[in-house]
Structure formats: structure tokens, C-alpha cells
Image 1: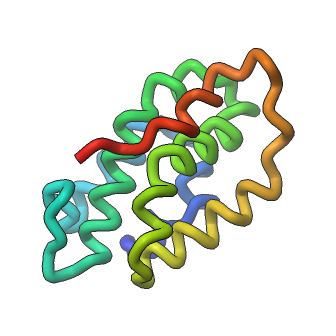
Image 2 (image 1 turned 180 degrees about the horizontal axis):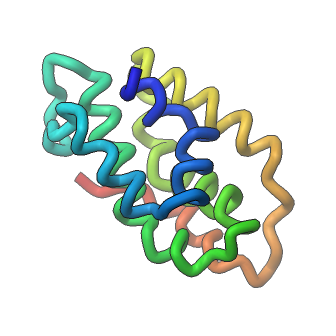
Amino acid sequence: ELKELLLDLDWLKARILTSSCSDAINDFSYIKAAVPLGRQGSDSTEHDLSLLRKALAFSVQALNSSSSEDVPTTLCQQLLGRLLPHITSNTTEARTLLRDSLAKALQDLPPPSSSSSSLPMLLTPLQP
């Protein structure tokens, strides 16, 4: 199902690497994930997908300026920083998938360098 693909971090990495971050964001338009931030809809998975889409949109500049070998690390850093406050509060199937994917990705991240430009984004969550 498309919703599960969009919540799969490995799929998102591959999608961004083989096309673009904008194409990955456009994939969200194929589902009904237009629940406004700060408003829980009847389908919390759609709300979670809306949060993920917005996090990707805020991350476009960092992802576009990353080399292809740095995209997986940058994507993890950006999503972790922007979504962590949202995925630790309430447990839904979507949040569990995101949390598990980010936890797996976090294990694969190299230690931060002192010149890492993405590091401040770890402290900047999405604002409703």
C-alpha cells in the first residue's frame, strides 16, 4: 500500500536518490494526506503522513545541497529533528513505522562532524 511505502525510510531514500525530493513530496498527493497540522483527523495515519510530507518539504534545501552519498544521512537527520517531538507522544501504526525506521537509520549514521550543517536541524522540530 502507498501509505506504508511513504512511511518506509528506505523507500524514501531510494525515491529521493533515483528522482528528487520534490518527486517524493509529490507522491503524497496520491493519497488523502491533506490533514492540516495541529488538527487530528479521523485517520491518524493521514495526519502522520501530512507531518512527514511537511518535514520533507522543509528539508528540500538540505537534501538538494547534499551529495548523493550524503542524502541518506541528511534525510535521517532532517526527519529525526523535525518529527521526533511528534512520534514520541502518541502511538499509532504510522508513528510506530516512522519511529522504527528512524531508530534503524540512527544506528547507521556516522558520528556528527564539527562542520555538519545539518546538526542544528536536529533541534528544530516542525512548528504547527
